[in-house]
Length: 173
Image (tube, one colour):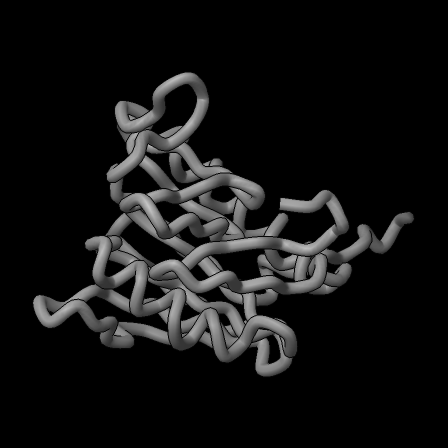
């Protein structure tokens, strides 16, 4: 793929090209990554990564979720092995990727067996926690907005709000 600043993903043989994310998107990705890395330190065998990090369930499909939690035993040479299923995938919506993150990519994650799929909508300051059902679809099991707190037990023990994920300067700075 060309090194032109775009993100290239392949879903069922179809190329998805999206522009590089903006600052607000990346601030949320950084907040989620920090939260999940901290939780992974307390969990056995789990690691959290942010894009670019390839998830390749089968030949012909290559995805780069914004944030992904994987079992470290599925890593080979620093990469997720072909066919390995992440524990959790997180996508942060933006105008250029909204339809794909909620449609084709969500379907691809469900078909590959990813048990947990979170979608963060920065415009609404809302996070949707979704669990995979037997019919390869996700069901929203919890959602949280702004300063509201959420406590989760699966896939990691966490308590946080969307506001906790936002970039904020210290008042003393």
